[in-house]
Length: 150
Image (cartoon, rainbow, N blue to C red; front, side):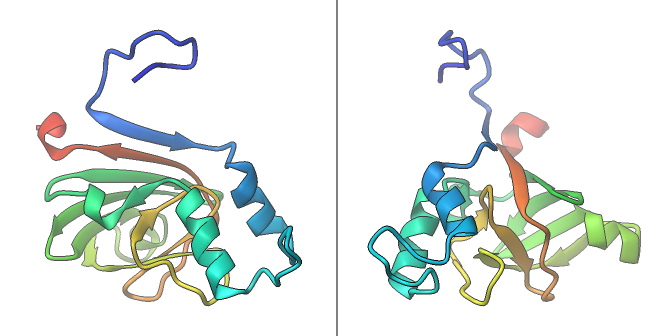
């Protein structure tokens, strides 16, 4: 993996996603119509745009992996436990419980009711946890492999 200067990166142990968000994602978040004049709430368009968002997908995480999510208002540490269960700390969870809480992840939204269930976290979107907590817009995502953290 090359860094911003084009040099080979020394650390392949994590994936880092950061704003600026892709132009297609920015259009989705700010536009009410697509270039084809379809409404932004068109399900096919939302699905297409979410696939362009990048980020971390459910199939990308293994037990022990940690996904750090920086939103507009908070920072969350999301550790994949197994079977769709995550141990989450930071943000609302720290305010309410003061310790990591096990929950599921429903997916990501653009701030509306259409849920992209395959996404754990993607820049420009909102993360929705299984307990119905929805984050502010995600600004940065870092995915750390579990074996690199031990």
